[in-house]
Amino acid sequence: MTNTPDDSRYVFLVDDDANIRASLSRALNLRGYEVQAFASASAFLDAYDGTASGCVLLDYGMPGMNGLELQERLTDQGCKIPIIFITGHGGIPESVQAMKMGALDFLEKPFKQSVLIDRIEAAFETDQERRLDSRQHSQVRKRFDALTEREREIAMILCTDTGHNSSKQIARQLGISPRTVDHHRARILEKMNVGSVAELVETSMRAGLFEDI
Image 1 (spheres, rainbow, N blue to C red):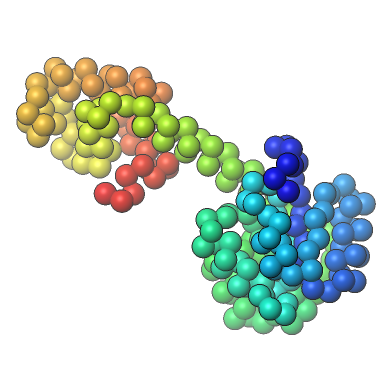
Image 2 (cartoon, rainbow, N blue to C red; image 1 turned 180 degrees about the vertical axis):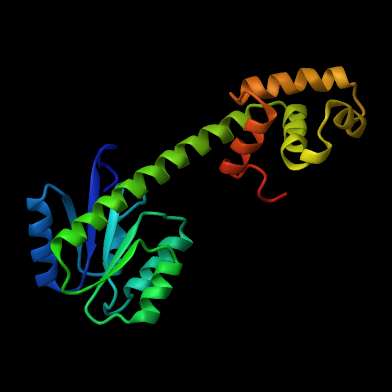
């Protein structure tokens, strides 16, 4: 699964029922979807490396590791692929817990194929947006890492102490001249590819640059 093309999107079907795997795989293939089917949560974990895009169609009640436990494992690994739960016996508490943990939906069998297709398309869109955000955030972090040590220091002040980030205030804090701060500010905006300090703050917040501060 590590060799899938970047533009491919997959439905990863995880269900211990062979009949369900066969029927859903067939129906989704006829709809033009690429389906990878697994008989257990552990089999999916062994095969999926987190790079292929798409969604997980996940049975809730499975022997061994159940669907909710697989969701927890993926969350712990930082994997954000959208999950659609399918179940024949899930109740409200289970669905609430799954949704709180980020599941896209919780469908009870039997469900209409049209409903499932709608959920899969929504999941694909969600996954695409998340991956785009991740790429953009990675680019922001690379630009930040390319700043000099002094520029990173000033950028951090600009973004985390917005009430005291004038050039004069920063100059006093760092023991340098306001003109030097102005020069660094201009370089920071240029290197970070933003047009203003406000845009720098917004970009850094979205990318989580200073979350630990």
